[in-house]
Amino acid sequence: MEERKIAMLRVHEQNIERYQGLLRTKLSDVETHFIERRLSEERFAIEMLKFMSRGETPVTDHLFA
Image (cartoon, rainbow, N blue to C red; front, side, top):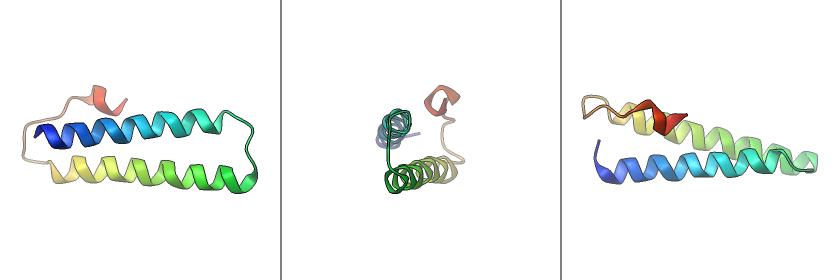
């Protein structure tokens, strides 16, 4: 997988970690819903990158843990 895609995967993973941290705080229902939606979008973006990279050099699973 090219370096650019690996960098994008790392950014999405960092965003997921940040959003998960926010969910551990006290949030309103609206805020929680927004963060959950963003988490879903970040996870989808990772899956799309993985799908689009099929046939390229395999990506190690540690990027998605």
